[in-house]
Amino acid sequence: MNVAINDSDILISDHIIERINCTNGKINWGIGIGLAGSTYDNNYPEDQAVKNFVVANITGSDCRAVDPC
Image (cartoon, rainbow, N blue to C red; front, side, top):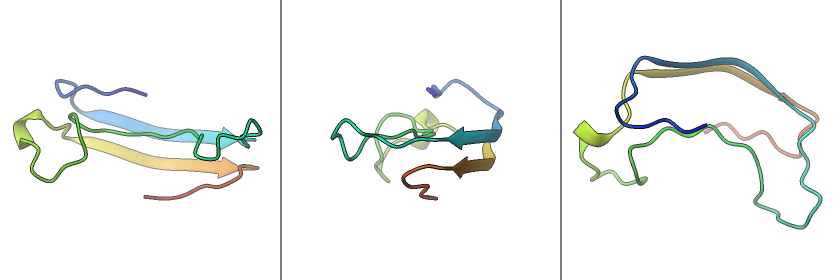
């Protein structure tokens, strides 16, 4: 999922992620939901960062790992 800085009032909700288990040797492979302006940096200009968003009710089952951030 890609969200740009000019998007607004974003709702990402009620998703089920199932049966994710990388078997091709790429141990950091996975599925993620990320919202950012550009980089993960506390000095990034606020006016260029994604704002006004909700990520809720994301569940996973039969996955190698489900890590909340």
